[in-house]
Image 1 (cartoon, rainbow over the protein chains, first blue to last red):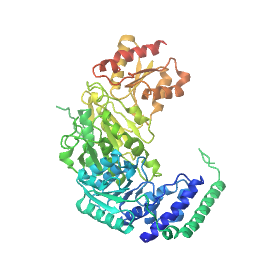
Image 2: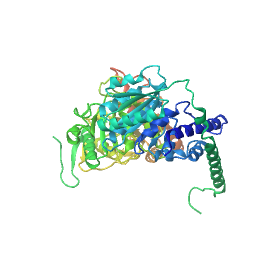
Image 3: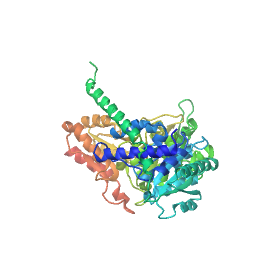
Image 4: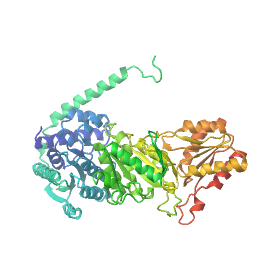
Length: 255
Length: 335
């Protein structure tokens, strides 16, 4: 498994490549981590591979942590995401819902169904969507149904979001979102609590908008991503060629 | 007292609520993955008593009294289904479904497509719908067209106890979401013979409930009995023979059965209690026009609810009744 710092650097390098491709119109809009790499990577690293992950748009993070290669992710980007659906689903990564918070009730229901099986449902959300009613619905259902779910909010500290946990009667935790090790340890503790008590946990990972990321870390994986991109381009070209050479499909009776 | 017959084909006379309750009981006995969730479905047995006895039999882990939130009921049912359960989500009245509408339309209906077929959501959403119980504007609506308009959902509406049990059991074998709208006006008024043993009424199949020669009346839910009354009146008072078809499954629609009838009679009346504009009847007459145009002898008629909120006190004006269906039939027959 990659180290936490290694993951942060790789995610960042991938983001820059995919953002460039997006700006060039080669791929659909790409949602980059934009300074939230440490929070997202730390959370993904804390989870077991049997845990179910309800993630937002920065899907490269749990995918990389669960063993998807940069080449696969870049190929997925170049295919408009189509080739990634199975890759993610087979790793119990449930890709983004239409409404950002819509996945919170899903996580609650899945965690309820999974009680006693030793794994949790994890749901991530940026605090920009904190006013969506499904945030309350999901955490409240998890609390009432005693479901082992961890709800992870990336916040910018405008309000103390962690205090909302008291209203649902669930455990609340707060962590520095720029400290990848601290986030990993906090989510690990939350996971253990959720399983031990069969109850949800609410985490606020605090971020600063003006955070400066280590330049060396940002560029550490540029070479690796460049060669992965070449491999992805070659793979896409092969697919196109194979499609062009394939005999025309006819419907109805076979000749 | 229920009428009971014995033997391998034993039946008993049940009303629709009892048939639905019997189906849920058998489904939960036969499949540990089936769970029921909703408002007051547990200890109380449901406001219409459809889940009576399930809590005592299967306990609180499989018969779940939820907080009062339709988005939560549907949303958690989705999560349960992703994990492999077969949730039956009860929406207490169809009028209450709208807070959960986003979860149905944006999430439940699209999970299979969005995940490239890797995730399915076999959630059965049951909801009592329709007027005729003096329920006023928030306990009487017919929202079937909203769901029929959403790709990814099966939409089914039984009209009698036999079909209610068989369609519910078929829905629980289906690997994708099913919206089962139950006409609460006939929850107790509709009684009939229901087999004791489990059986399925296939989804996607309409039923010819009264054969006829001169005209086709197409209806579903509580309007089937209105259509049958109208057919009897047309026969006894006007000497005309009307065929009545119960649509049963709105999506996927059994257009073959409908078209076979209308191609033969050349005339049709479509009946539903939802408002007229963009109601499901519009889809029915459009499909029949496309399929049967060269055999039609008269314009297709619609008899529907009105384009108003469901009324507090004037539901007898709002809801299609036998005289309105007979009038439309006579227009079609004399055009």
